[in-house]
Length: 88
Image (tube, rainbow, N blue to C red; front, side, top):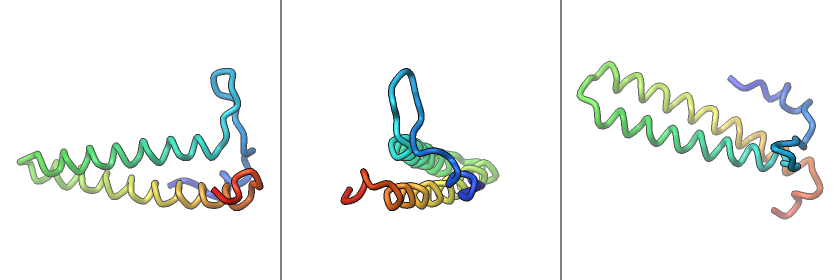
């Protein structure tokens, strides 16, 4: 699980590849990636005839759903705390 208290202590900006990237941008990318992977896992669960594998894929998809919820909570926190995100 993601420790949101630890995340709150991080700075809101990161230098990535020589350009300034905000935590908001990073979080949006992470949420998109997690949602995409969740969809793939759900598809794997539907496509397999192996019930044990299907349960594993469903469990992993649920874990990603929980991560996505936490990331969205952090995203909301960043938007609330940083004035440049007000009204977005």
